[in-house]
Image (cartoon, rainbow, N blue to C red; front, side, top):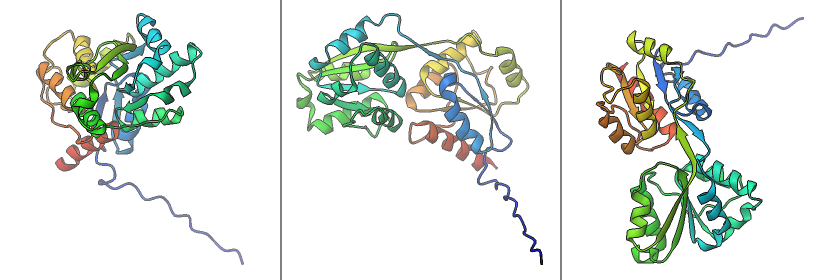
Amino acid sequence: MTMSRTIKEPSPKTAAQQPLAGRTIIITRAREQAREFADELEGLGARVIICPTIEIVEPESFTPLDDAIETLFGYDWIIFTSTNGVDHFLRRLQTLEHDVSQLDELRVCAIGEATAEKLRAAHVHVDLVPEQFKAEGVFAALETFLGGREALQTLNFLIPRAAVARDYLPKALEDAGARADVVAAYRTVRPLDVDLPRISALLAGGSVDCIAFTSSSTVRNFARLFDTFDLSEVLEEVAVASIGDVTAATVSEYGLETQIMPDEFTIPGLARAIADHFGDQD
């Protein structure tokens, strides 16, 4: 006797599992980094429009970074502020025929778990991952880790990061008596391949529910796309999501209010915050 077998079809995802179903979200990350964020949002049911407002490129000159790499023995700490900083620093380290084992002599601070994981994958030890990702939290974490502000005195810090970034952390370290060398490991520039007519048409037609900004530079460059210092009309009726309070402060400079901001300043955290925002509306 032939036995028949019933194949069970996968059940459709519930509204709770796809709180962003029917929502269109613009994300402004660099194209090479947008996929992770897009996957998070699409998994929650969103239609994602990638509008990269920044592109990660090499610094105008490698000389300051090269000089720092050649004199790593002169530093006590190296602080990586992003995965971009890790990628570009380690690539230059290899170009100069140095081994990652040279970092064994330094203490390493990684801002964000993604940055820490990138370092560990490259066999670089990580001594400190601050709970708060912004500069003020990083300084406080260093102070606590070392046992007080006095312990920062005479220490030498290397910070390879974007060519343009906030100055709070190096200034705070120097005010505490440390030396902080900030060197450009990469630059963020505005890409030339943005499909602006499509983005404009979607916004004008009211087809966009939310725009997500992941750094201050994404806000500024989005405004430059529309040649304006006031984005309130461009993004009228569009919910604004900011990855953290520094980005939210830049959003406000351009005439907008941040409606969505995660407690944890990460891409997964931002995706969850967007889902919670729209889930609560349904």
